[in-house]
Image (cartoon, rainbow, N blue to C red):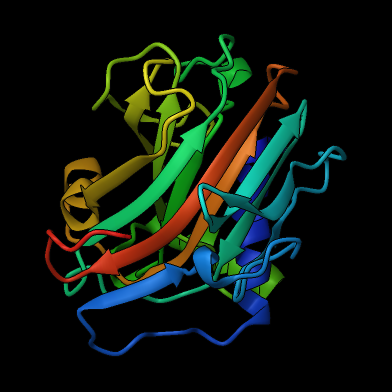
Amino acid sequence: MSRQKQIWMAVSFIMVLHTAVVLCAEPILTVGDFSQANTGETLPRHWEPLTFKKIKAHTTYNMVEDQGRTVIKAYSKASASGLIRKIGIDVKKYPIIQWQWKITDINKKTDVTQKSGDDYPARIYVAFEYNPDEAGVWEKTRFETARLIYGQYPPATVVTYIWANRVPKGTRIPNPYINQVMMIAVQSGDDKVGTWVTEERNIYQDYVDSFGHPPPMTSGVAIMTDSDNTEGTSTAFYGDIIFKSTSGTSIQ
């Protein structure tokens, strides 16, 4: 089974274990309040490990202090795993996702077009629920089979924001393993290595541009730093992640 399919199944399993969290109307929804955690903690509040059966070496995640605030530090050495929060968000009401991240190096072997290069120093996953009313016959069969096995539908589609190596910023490309995972290079190359970068994207519009129709509810948000395919190393830091009803207000 490919790593992306393992991600699919691992996310599905986590969804089974938890009741859906659908947040009420507020100007800002804080999905990852990492800055409120204590340094030394292994997991931030509401988040849990995302691991894959066939990958024995896992990325390490720790809460550390950087520039006076608590953030997540990820270190990967020929490894892959992530952290995930199961959460339902209506991105029609909260179309803006904002986060902060920093990397310390670029893995020169990464390549968005190749399975062997499907590693990134930092990425943010936004997974979306499966809607049977919009599915074709084959897709319905596949998802119903998954539901019988895991007790719940897996995510139908995923938008992934990546820090790429060589493709231009703004590049949009399907993941080499699974077409339902659309990758968007919001950063690329080493120009900003060692610098905290605040990102803001219209996830609603990115979804429409990627899949051609309005998005359903989200089913989860995840972060991942990995280097298992290229057998390299990567270090990244992740700051708070929020969803907003309008652009403008920034993470402090």
